[in-house]
Length: 438
Image 1 (tube, rainbow, N blue to C red):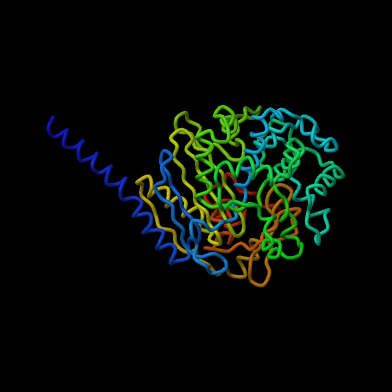
Image 2: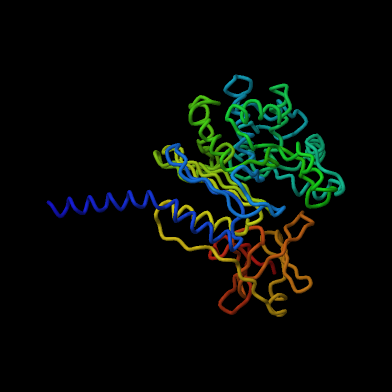
């Protein structure tokens, strides 16, 4: 009995020591990654609403040292704000989540699509990127009015019936600001600022399009920035501290009543099965008492991940600026240190030199109907999806593995037993590869 008690005391003391030391270990590891330029951004962790760790590392694009007050482009995490604005209007009785899209866009012909379908990516509507790249002048920035007119004119067929399948569609989120403006009688940015940003006490959260320096930096319209002035799915800046404050404001019911915000965490029951998307994010852990709701934004120059532990009150936030190719590995390192699990310190990626013979071997069309095309130019490999005139370099890390400079995901060329190319897809996941077209 005495020995059992001693073991319990020792285990309890080890737990206390780990709880006290993980912030020091995390800061030490992040400082190493900062020197290696593997992280430029912010890391924040809270437990049960209590802030345990909030630090900035690296430098911004102007070479100035990051602080916890430095705003970073949060990419698709902006959808969180858009969905909150819709929920606020719902709570105030000004719209219904079951309102048909045609109530606000009578000229758009997608019967059965409701506001809730746009929020959780179950509308079945086509993605409009390809239509814009194919039919919109490449020397003019797209506007909300122009996008709606283009949708109306082209009348593209839906990808599925509403509520049947889960198909991620950020262009659908670009339709929501107009809904918010029609219902509230205010500009989208003004409404979000008045009912979300200011009540939550966010001091460093803003819209890119309202900053003169942003408009100057993006320059003239071109094929890569046609959507640069669109709102609803992106074009916002914030900090890890502000996003934490937003989470706390929601939990304390400063903005919403609990029952209404819970609507955003419930996955849709689809005919094809239960979805993972909620409103403005995805439910990555559904078990009662252990729910995790994640908001994620990925771009070519910045990356944002906000993992909210709905039931425990914990939160993990990591924002990257420039160091996006390391985002996934940094996230897992931070999470494992926090949870007291084994971890590997991320390293700078290898650039492998492919022979001309191998590059020529990989050139071709991949996926259904040649969805993805691999080409070569000046000793480099590029990938280009159908409907997108831009091509992106894929960098080899070995003879058969690759990565994009702005992503932390690794990709692979799959070979059969005779060495013939059979597909291209996520590394180690041949079941998800795009088959080589003959």
